[in-house]
Amino acid sequence: MINRTIAGFFRKEISQTLRDPRMRALVFIAPILQLLLFGYAISTEIRNIKLAVQYTPGDVLARRWEERAMHSRWFVSARTSGNDPFAWVHSGQADAVLVMPAGGLTRGVGRGGAKVQLLIDATNVVKAQAVERYVQMLLKEVLSEAFPSAQAPPVFAFDIRMLYNPAMVTSYFLVPGVMMMLLCLVTILLTSMSIVRERESGTFETLISAPLKNWEILVGKTLPFMVLGLVIVHLILVAAILIFGLPFRGPYWKFLLAGFMFVLTTVSIGTLISTIAKRQQQAMMATFLFLFPAIMLSGMMFPVENMPKALIGVAYLNPLKYMLTLLRNILLKGGDDWVFWTNLSALFIIAVVAVGVSFNRFRQSLN
Image 1 (cartoon, rainbow, N blue to C red):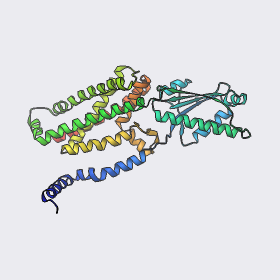
Image 2: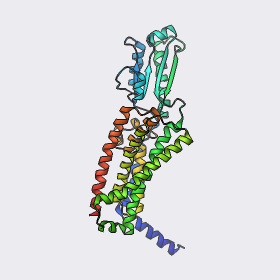
Image 3: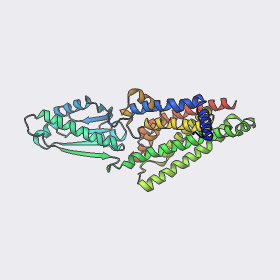
Image 4: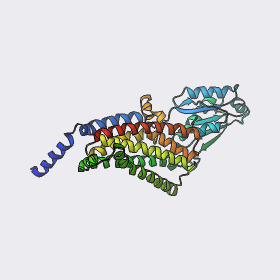
């Protein structure tokens, strides 16, 4: 026999949850959309690796290897400037650089003393390990085809240098992403739920009737969470350095500026969510609905280059992508100026748009 009290509670909770069209969309439509998004976006196969090959013009084997690499599904040609392969990797122009022997790979293999150097950006451990496997496999294939009569491919020395994370410590790769994820979660969730809580308790009407300007109310509600976000990012940074030994190779002012711009963006997103959600439950659901796809499209676990072109376009609108690039660049690479300013500029544009849209929506809700 069914307990009438339990049945009554069941009908009440189901009715309250599903009577709002927005909650129905969050419950039924959002999981399907996220499943489709993650199914297409997540791939363990590393592709579109920016590769540069440095060799003399007459090196036939090196040119053949480069052609084979560019026609594979793994590599794309890196657009580089200058002649320094280390600078190409440091500035992010290339994910990997294959430096052929000074006399040429063809001549070196013929003499039995070919020494090939591979420079890899190891700030992304998963990508670095894949690059090493791909390069060695293709190099062996090209040499086997060039010397078909030999019982074994010619012997060559392969000098691999993992830059910026030579020990391939996984935490160096993951911790910046965790820092960004926690900061994003706390700032968006606290901001959105704080404003919605005011509306639920009825004190929001008191703010509206008070002799305050719209911008004063908005700044007063969001500034505490911006300060709290900056405090949190420093606490996480100190914990990452002390617990995981995360290096801090860049200038502090770059880290602080990037953190401020990101917190400004996430607090604005939280404010925007608060103007849409009517209850704290909706605000929490909307926060996670934004956060999970944003994390997957940030490159935290899977390179953005692996994703379909349509999703890559969406990823370039994701503030988490730029913040993750800034953190890894500042903490592990020392803060290359070109990488820093280009990603900070993109984050600044997103922050301006987010602030403008959230302020407009907040002002409409006040009126």
